[in-house]
Image 1 (spheres, helix red, strand yellow):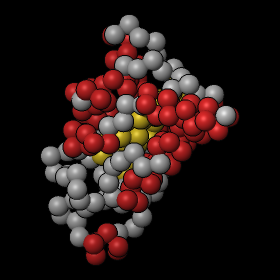
Image 2 (cartoon, helix red, strand yellow; image 1 turned 90 degrees about the vertical axis):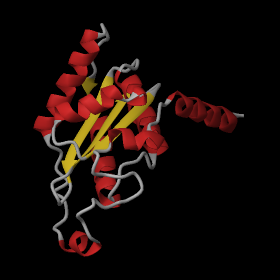
Image 3 (cartoon, one colour; image 1 turned 120 degrees about the vertical axis):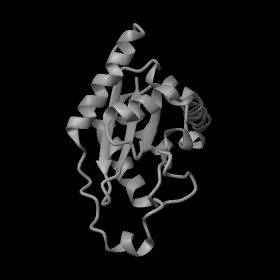
Length: 180
């Protein structure tokens, strides 16, 4: 019976998630396609010889994204979201994973949500991802223009984790992880 309840509970959290994995092309730049893990000018040889990404979350951009998220939410009379260390570390880890994969996605999403549920008592969560946008304003504009991403920005959430990390070619990858 407990196993059924846990499975049902996990299913409910998953159902409440507005995942945008199928809409990745909405946030991808015109130069990036959904099906390839390389940019048009990148070859496998170049990828192998290029130094690895620094895997350093760029705080100035993540702070700017947080300010833009909260300004957007304020315009809609929604409560602001505040940074959460657990969510931020999960966002960083996922962003590094996407860089390693060479593409954006929501792989292992349930694992991140389970960690938030266990460590932060999260009741609901959602995630936005993107790549190739050069700055906070451009990625936020893309997320706002996308119905699914906008729903996450406008969701009933109180906490956020944000990552913005450049790959070895200098291309940004982003993750926003919301929860309450």
